[in-house]
Image (cartoon, rainbow, N blue to C red; front, side, top):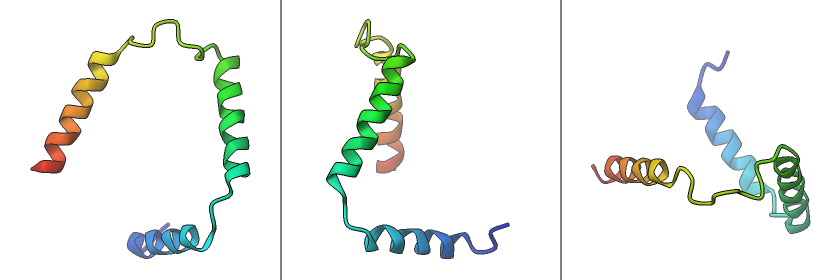
Length: 68
């Protein structure tokens, strides 16, 4: 059980700052995720605009919450 979540977040942030970005490793991860999505039939999208209304509503709701 985590007793001090703020301390954990601070630790995680320090770990991320200590590591330099590795372009090639990130590219490998991206390609693996894309391959998995393609194998599952998610990519390529049959209709790229499918569900765009939901995305727009969600973006508006998030924007309203951030500005409030």
